[in-house]
Length: 264
Ligand code: ADP
Image (cartoon, rainbow, N blue to C red; front, side, top):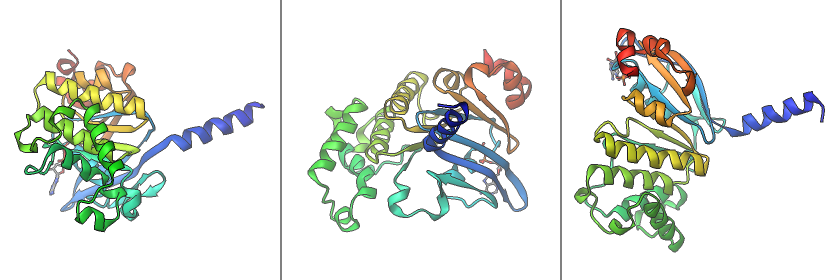
C-alpha cells in the first residue's frame, strides 16, 4: 500500500473512532462569558479528564455537551450529529453520570438500572415497566460488573454513596453508550471510594471502547486515570495535553501559582 493510501486509511480509522466533537463552543450568561471558543474531540476508548478551578466553565461546557444548554456559537457533535438535533434513538448513545447520582430513591437498584434501557424500549413498554427478559438479564449483568449484584433488589436510598454511584454507572452501562459524560462523579465521595468508582469507569472505557469525559477536582485522579487532560481557566481552553506531558507549567496555566501545589 502506498504511503498516501496508508494515510487515508489511518485518517478514516481516526474519523470512524471519533465519538464527540466540541467545535468553537461559546456561551454567555447576561453578556458575561462563561466559556469561549472551546474546541476538542474525544475518540472511542479515550479517557479525558476536564480540569479547572471553580468558575472556569466546566459545568457550562458539560451542559452544552449533553444538550441541556444550547451554545451561543459553535456546536457539539455526537457520532457526527449535532447534539441539539438528535432523535431519542440517537441520544441513547450518550450516557451521563452526575455528582449526586440522580437515582430514583424509592425503587430498587435493578429498576434504576433498567431505566438505562428506556432509550432502547418502545415508550409504551417503558410506561408499563414491561422490560424484556433480555433487558433484565443485561441490567443484572451491568450490576454484576459494578460489583452490586447482591444488592439488585435493595432500594436505592438504602445504599451508600459509593454504591449509589455504582448503580448510576450500571444504569449508564445498560444504555450501551458510545460516550459517557461524568460530571464530577467522585466529588461527593471519599478518596478511596472515589478511586474505586474511577477504576470502574476506566475499565468500561478500555474494555468496551466507550469514550469517557470526566470532570474532576483532583489532579492526582486525572493523572492516574486519564489519557488526556483538557483544562479550562476563565472560560477558555488553556490545556489539551496527553497526561504524560502534563507538567508543572501546564498546571500553573490552569491553577495559577497554586498549580505547583496541585502537582504535589
Ligand atoms: P465551573 O463548573 O467550572 O465552576 P461554571 O460553568 O459553573 O464553572 O461557571 C462559569 C461562569 O459562568 C461563572 O462565572 C459562573 O458564575 C457563570 N454562570 C454559570 N451558570 C450561570 C447562570 N445560570 N447564570 C449566570 N451565570 C452563570
